[in-house]
Amino acid sequence: MKHIEKRTGRHCLSLPSNRLGLYLALRHWCTPGQRLLMSPISADEILFLVLAAGLRPVIAPLDPRDGNIDAARVDLSTVDAVLTTNLYGLPDRVTAFTGKIVIEDVAHAMESELDGRPLGTFGQAGVFSLSKHPGAGSGGVLAVEHAADLRALERARDELLAPGSLRADLLSVSTSMARQVALDLGLVRPALAVARAIGLEEPREGFRIPLNPDALELALKEIPELPPFDPWVRADLHAYRSRRGRLARWYQGRRTAKVPGERGRRLAGVTRLAGLPAVAPAVRDHLDQPLFRVPLLVRERDAAIAELERHGVSTGYLYAPAYDDYAPGFAEPSPDPAQARWWARHVLPVDPMYADRSLPLLRALEPATAPPPPLP
Image (cartoon, rainbow, N blue to C red; front, side, top):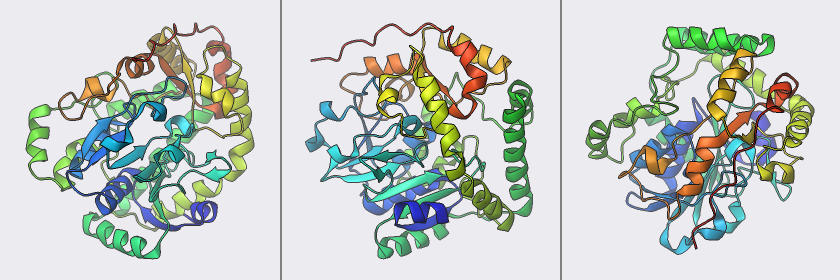
């Protein structure tokens, strides 16, 4: 947490997960019934957090250059608040949302900046993840400008926290350490098989967890409340709102302290991957950003994933289908969903920390055909 406090200059609240921080921020600054603009491409649990907070998700058109909200095609007069995504570390155009409540999801963007200013410092709150850049397996940090907000959020956090245990902390830390060893040794494929066999990965329909519309309708009758949404929000992190003990906090701090020292290696990987013809165009505009992942847009994405895993390269962080097709009826649809569908079908996120390992395979990939033109 100290690294984030120093980087943002904000008051910071320690959390067991980024997702709990997002819920707390939405409940603190928004009122049930308000309309929240959000990207069509983001993690499953984010949509359910918005619903749990009693907000109406309004799905934005997507910019195919970076997979974020296309701010130029949004009518801000129709929404009350905005949730940014900063997909894979590429910055949202957060300054375009001035005048609205802005909650920044900076899970992918711990080290990213916009106009020389760290992401997570533009909105009312920035919510960081310690499982992404640091690779700590769990943990989050909520950064806010005012101490009064911090105190209120701390009280709200404590009301939602469930008891933790040393056993849970040991499992979290050992799993994270094993995952890091698997990445370093190129043992991704057997590690994934073991994780699935022992139930560390939630069952999925393709890349998304099952929606279960009937059960979701029942949960919606209890909003604004988070616990009824646990079956969806806890995906792949069942202890997302459980207290963390000394061991987990020590490990999170140790991993986070390493992030600045990895910046050079990450930037070098971004630069190398940016030379590929399939790279998302916005990456070349942000070569100075140590991205969490470098998005490529390739023709045969699923075949590429399987081949990369066979050679010890993990992908993950795929959000398909887009929200319009994943949860119809639970959000106001995008006015132009075609580009989000195209992105969700073709994007291949690549870890820049292991660019050397993946480049021989990535050079052979054929870029996706051009995205559909935006609707007038």
